[in-house]
Length: 398
Image (tube, rainbow, N blue to C red; front, side, top):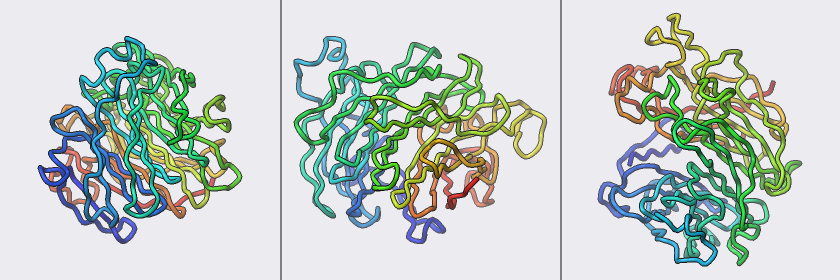
C-alpha cells in the first residue's frame, strides 16, 4: 500500500510503501482510514491472501502503524438464516473503518452478508479488544457498505442490495442502538431508496470496473443545531441504463427510521455521469462537504475537458458544501485542475471504488485518482497510469 503524510495542511507530502510483508503483513488493497478525538488513526485494508480483515493503529499521525487486530470469521448464530450462512467468508471485501465517541468500528462484505465489529477506545493508543463480529440482519448479498457512529454511541451501517448485472440497487440501513452494548444490530434493515445503480453498472467514464451507488454516511456529533442528524450520500441513475447518474444526499433525524427527500448535489444541466461520491462532516461546524467524479464538461467536442472526442468518457473531480444541514448545496466547484480518462490507465479497474475526503476547520481535503498530469510532475506522464492527487478546499457559501 502507498501511504502519505502531510504535516502542513496538505501543501507537501512524505510518501512511503507499507504492508509489503512488514509488520502489517502483505497488503492487497481497499484501505480505509479514520481519526478519532484522541488522535488515534485507524487503518483497515485487505490482505493479499487470507479471509481475515486487519486493523492497524497509528498514534503519531500516520508516521508509523502497528497491527492491533484481525477480524476473523463470526461464530455461528441462531439468528442467521441459511442463506446468510451460505458462503459466509468465502471471501472478504470492501472494508471501511470509523472511529469516535470512544469506539472504533469496522464493516465489510463477508462473502454474502455484511459483517461489523467494534472495540472500545479510552485514549491515545488505548484500544480494547474487538467484540465478536456480527452478521448484520437483512444484508445478504448487500455490497459496498459504510458505517458511522452517532452522538450517543449508536452505530449505523449502510449497504446496497443489488440485482444481477446492471439492474437496480436498493439502499438499506441497519442500526445498533447501543453500539458496544448488548443490543446488537436490529433484526431487520430499513429501506431508504432505489438508486437504479446495479452492483456492476457500466458507464462511459468507468467502462472497465463499472460503478455502484457507493453509499456513504456522516453523523453529526457536534452538539450544534443538527446534532444527531445522519446524512447519506449515494449515486442515483435517473433512468435505468441511461448513464445519467447524479449525486444525492438524504438525512435522518430519528436514527434512520425515516429519511428526508433526496437533495441533488451536482448542479449541471447535462445528462452526463457523476459518480463515486464521498461525504464528510466538519466536526467544528456541522457543515457538509461532498466530492465526486464528474463528466459534465465532456461533450465530445474537443477542448480541455475532452481527451478523445467521445462524450461522457472523461472526468474531473468536483465538490460542493452544505451549510444548512443538507437541505441545499452550494454552487459546484471543479477541484481537479485537469481532465482524466480512466480507460487510458489500462488498469482494468478505472478510478477504482474509493476516493478520500476529510473536512475539518472549514477546509475540505479530498484525495482522488487522476492521470491528467495537471501539476506537470506526474512520473507516469499524461493520460497513462493513475496517480493520487489531493487539494485543500475552503468552505464556500452560495
